[in-house]
Image (cartoon, rainbow, N blue to C red; front, top):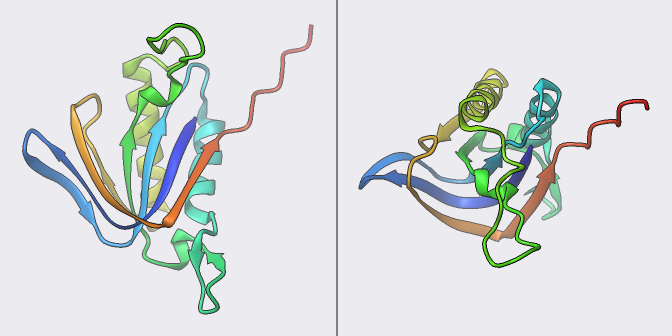
Amino acid sequence: MKAVVQRVLEASVTVDGQRVSEMGPGLLVLLGVGKGDTDADLTWMVEKLATLRIFEDADGKMNLSLEDTSKHLIVVSQFTLYGDARKGRRPSFIDAMEPVAAKALYERACEALRQRGLTVGTGIFAADMKVALVNDGPVTILLESPPKAAAPA
């Protein structure tokens, strides 16, 4: 799994002119699911998102996590994080998980974040979404679940 994590003062998602999610301070997460991603990747990503210390404490140090602060995030599905544009001019998305399985893993990730006591807004999977945000800092972190161990030869 891959994620672009942005600390925000506010964020919203609009689909077909209708606001489907909005929040004040927290995290906006663009989440991509790749071929071969498993429950282990989901568990790793959920733990990392909930506990990543990127919010400032009373001394101005990035020392607090989402669980320590607002507890609000919006998670937007983003298969284009698996776009490979190293060759040619059009990205290839062959490393993205197929949509039905990707949607299931994305929805399970959102539910796992809720189970941790976080307030989770979402976009609409596979919709044309308009995402608005005010990045705070700016603080933007790229996350990728650890690579799988190679199978023994």
